[in-house]
Length: 314
Ligand code: SF4
Ligand code: SF4
Ligand code: SF4
Image (tube, rainbow, N blue to C red; front, side):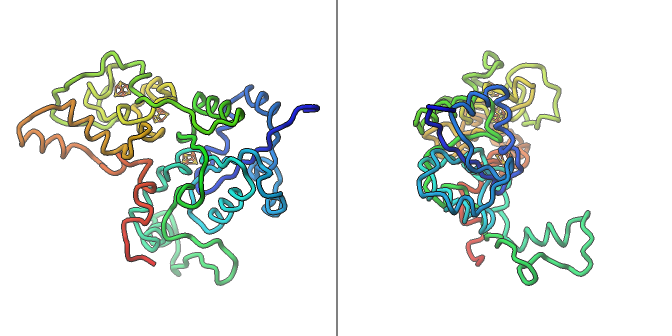
């Protein structure tokens, strides 16, 4: 806009599903407010930008760069370093960039196991010659041994959590960032803003935990019904988006600030609402917890296991 100093912003899509890249559109008409304050200088998914365009920019010339997706290939790593150099504020945008997200569960497996599953053992793939993509015939970015979060590669100035960042989180973050603030967001747990919080129990009496599809929802707090809901260990800010749609929280906003491990924090919340019980019952309840890593560490595995499960892989 004439006479007004516009912030230069960039958006890049690393290893992720693309949901974060389109999530800016969830701002609807507010995106017009953003465009009154900011000029997009690099967004390969939405406009025709080439990496050379980024290389040619002066160091520090981008005011705010949003990196969404994780670092899975050498190309992701290269662009992350380039964006760091070219930007004043580098933002990890979304769960993949901040914690590794669902794709970070791949850090429980070696690169060979992943390639075997995807290219050789996948029932929907016909690959009789056992071909695995390689750089012999064409240049492909190297698939790194482990998936990394943005912060594991470069210095990050601000973090916007969520898979993808829910609208209220995004609005709040953008407003703060445009004012030059890099700290924002709520520091309480999701239960605090949950419409079902009045029925959240101090203690519950159950014999097993259920996954959401295994039990009919009666409208009370999910935990009161024995249905796993990550609300007590998850940072507030999304205005309980999933719960408002009658779906328990899976924890995409990550841990409450200053809590390092969302999974341990959730297990300890469960232990406290279950209270004391005899050993047999305790065993029965623990055994009813299915897919423990996928439930309690769905989003943060890569953040917690940057070197993966296997230490001896090259
Ligand atoms: S954080 Fe979620 S929406 Fe964003 S890229 Fe990763 S998987 Fe997709
Ligand atoms: S446990 Fe889940 S349903 Fe219960 S109050 Fe917390 S966020 Fe809401
Ligand atoms: S309710 Fe939980 S899973 Fe859903 S958007 Fe909020 S933090 Fe993410």
